[in-house]
Length: 244
Ligand code: SF4
Image (cartoon, rainbow, N blue to C red; front, side, top):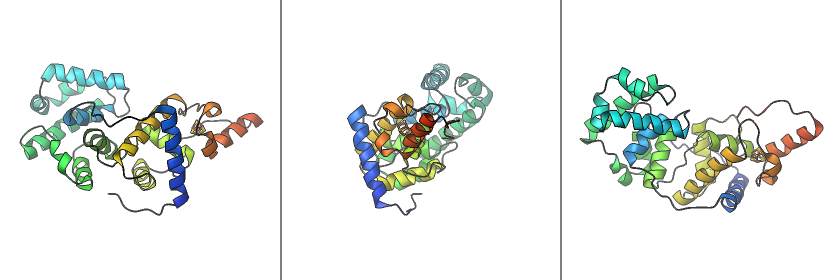
């Protein structure tokens, strides 16, 4: 999955400089699992294109009704779809969640993925992404947050901000962005975790999709996109936001 790409060594310096500014601005913290690996997996499946509040509401409604992974596996698709409706695309997520639970329980004898802790990271990624509805973003999030494996979840914020800063071309796919970021950053779960968390925060608070606040951004000196954007605003030639 992690094919090698040619990476300019100067880009590594750039990525490290970005990381240094991010942790100076937003701080760093140890990797602390926020929920069990099974809950992390299923909640992340629910989280796609969904706010944190709606992801939680969908999960809570589902769990209040069924109360066990086995009962969710055996639930009717229609009923499960209704229960997880606070999440977007419930009609796609419900069958995927059921099928993923069935795969795990059939294969492991129980709803438990703790074995990933002892699996090499590439094998863990391959296994997780073979589950129905589980992509690289969900797999990397489970592996990094729950098992401190050296991967980096590329969510919409990490993708957009890293692209604007020029760590990869702006149209790069999330999967290729994951490969590139892994080659730019040290293979240290602590660094990857804090890069992810701080980049996410930066994307939510400063480098937003529609109106990045470049004028107060601590990364402006490293960001050609932001500098060009500010110049365009000054000249009055800027018309629309970035596609990312
Ligand atoms: S300078 Fe602007 S575009 Fe660049 S990272 Fe900061 S807010 Fe985003």
